[in-house]
Length: 324
Ligand SMILES: Nc1nc2c(c(=O)[nH]1)N[C@H]1C(S)=C(S)[C@@H](COP(=O)(O)O)O[C@H]1N2
Ligand SMILES: [Mo]
Image 1 (cartoon, rainbow, N blue to C red):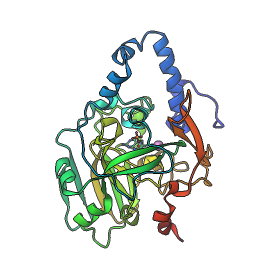
Image 2 (image 1 turned 90 degrees about the vertical axis):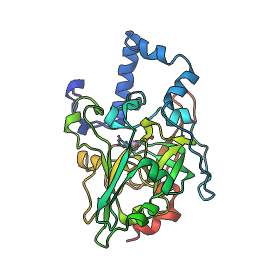
Image 3 (image 1 turned 120 degrees about the vertical axis):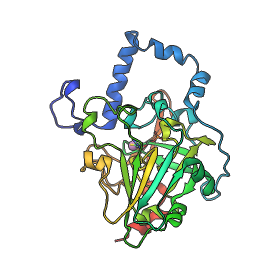
Image 4 (image 1 turned 30 degrees about the vertical axis):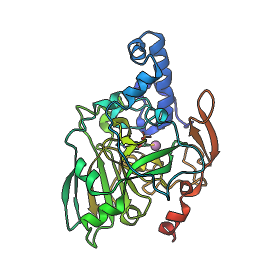
C-alpha cells in the first residue's frame, strides 16, 4: 500500500488512507466486535434476509416510471437490489460500506432544493414539485466507483438538462456546484478526523457536462424512491465519471463563473481530480484502474473482474466534451 509508517488506528490521518483501506480495516473491526458479542444486538435485528430487505427499503415508496429505450440495459446484469442498497459510500454516516442503518437517520420530510447563482429564474423546489414537474423515467446505467468496484443500477429520475432549461443560466455561468445535506447533529461523519473534512459534501460539473444527455438526477432506484443510504430524496448520477462525482441528498445547486472546490478534490487533490472521468489507462496514484470488480457476480467475496471501459462505456455520448 502506501509508503508510510503504519500508525496506530487512533492516529490515522484520513488523507493517508483510501476509502477501501478504511472499509477493510473496519470490516476486521466489525468481525472482532461481533465475536466479542458487541454485534449480537445488530445480528438479532437482521435474523433473516427478508426482514433485512424490508428494513433496507423501509423508507421508500413505489415510483412508477417507464424504462427508457435508449438506456434499457448494459452488457452485464443489473446488480441485486439488496447489494446496491447495502454496500454504500456515504461518509456523512460513516467511513465504511456498511452505513445503511446509520443513514436511516437522514431526515427526508419537507425536503427542499435551492437553485440559484447565475440563473434568470432562481427558485426553491419542494421535492414533490420536482418529481411532478419533470417527467421521470428509468435508466439502467453502469456505475463505477474510483475504488474499482462496479455495479449496474436501474435509476429513476430525469436528465439534468431539463432543470438547466427551467432555471435558464446566464451566459456567465460556466460551472455548477451541488451541495449535499449536512447537519453535524445528524451526520457524524467517518469518526476520527471527521471535523477536519471539508463539509458539506459538494461536487461540481462544467455546465456542458451537466447539459449532456447522460447527466441525471435520480429520485429513485429499483422502482422505488431512493432509500436514505443511496442519497434520498435526490442525488446526482454521472455514469461516465467515478462514483464520488455523484453527490447524494442534494439541498443546493448553484450556477457559477468559476470552478468550485469539491469535497474529495479538496481533501486529497492528487488522487481525486475535478474531472474524474472513468479511464482504464489513468491509474489512481495507489492502484490500477485497468480492471473493475463487479459487485455480486462471484462467489464468497462476491465479485468477478472485467476490463474498465473508457468513460465507463459511454464514449459515444461524452467523448466530444473532452476533445482538445
Ligand atoms: N453526500 C455524499 N455523496 C456521495 C458520497 C458521500 O460520501 N457523500 N460518496 C460517493 C461515492 S465515493 C460513491 S461510489 C457513491 C456511492 O453511491 P451508492 O452508495 O448509492 O452506491 O456516492 C457518492 N456520493
Ligand atoms: Mo466511490
